[in-house]
Image (tube, rainbow, N blue to C red):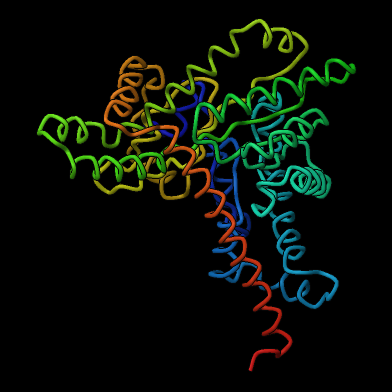
Amino acid sequence: MANPLRELERYGQSVWYDSLRRGILASGALGRFVVEDGLKGLTTNPAIYEKAIGETRDYDAELATLLGRPELDAKAIYEQLAVHDLQAAADLLRPVHDATGGRDGFVSLEVSPLAARDAAATLAEARRLWGALARRNVMIKVPGTPEALPAIRRLLAEGVNVNVTLLFSRRAWAAVAEQHLAALEDRAARGAPLAGVASVASFFVSRIDTLADALLDERCATAESEDVRGRAEALKGRVAIANAKLAYQDWRALVAGERWRRVAALGATPQRLLWASTSTKNPRYRDVVYVESLVGPETVDTMPPATFDAFRDHGRVRPTLEQDVEGARRTLAELDALGISIDAITDRLLEEGVRLFSEPFGKLLATIEDRRAAEHGLHP
């Protein structure tokens, strides 16, 4: 029986894994994912590390050494742990990177979410992490906030591979795509090579339905007629996929344009859309619906472990990303007609996303400090 994860490659989509902890490196599981499932890359974030360090013993040995170094604060300790993991994963995925001509085989490490609204801090941290990782097949994850846009352009212009994360709206994606294109033009203007500068735009999916469905529930509760109530009910579970499908149409228009063709002729590769937040939050929906509904060429799907396993088990693979694009347009038009703004949804999700990434980061640092205190007998 064909492996559905491997089948995605037939339609031009790369599968990345949205998790990294030392256990899957040490056990050989990550290597098996590459060989058996066609895994092409992975992403991680501080929230994943907060769980890994707090809930497993994977890091005990290295922590015992690092905690004894008073010159290292909690953030420096976390970064050393993460850098060691990312370097090992990058080395494991380097054959994928080479075999795909630098298109895949990437691992991503995120700058501190506390710098999400500070371009200068983001730029400095991204440069530092890029230097510490010292691998061509790594990406630095930078939140796609308006404040971070200048840093994204500068990093790409310097040749740093960037994974722009926390994108919810087509408007935000367009702003990021402009920075990517401008950075390539900056490099071309000074005669620097464009080949080898890689980037993805991480466009979040299921969180949009979580919020949209809640607003649609409110609309149902206040509906002045059965017709309005029925229209609101019919949109549940459809907004996120419609939003992503239209973002892909925006992407296609960009790479068909003359401005993109000029940099492509100089060796540039597209900034692919990466579908993030593809786990299903609502148990009433099929557990792999967001993966199945967004299959198309020149895209990446980064799946958390449960979604990865579920899709391997029972995923259905068809070229869905460009199916019923007009239906996607009607879905968002109907949402607006019901008085619910997609822009308001995506703006709120960006604010929540920055907070939801910052809180685990704070917990992660606190966990490390607690471990240090315990090691040195500072707790009563």
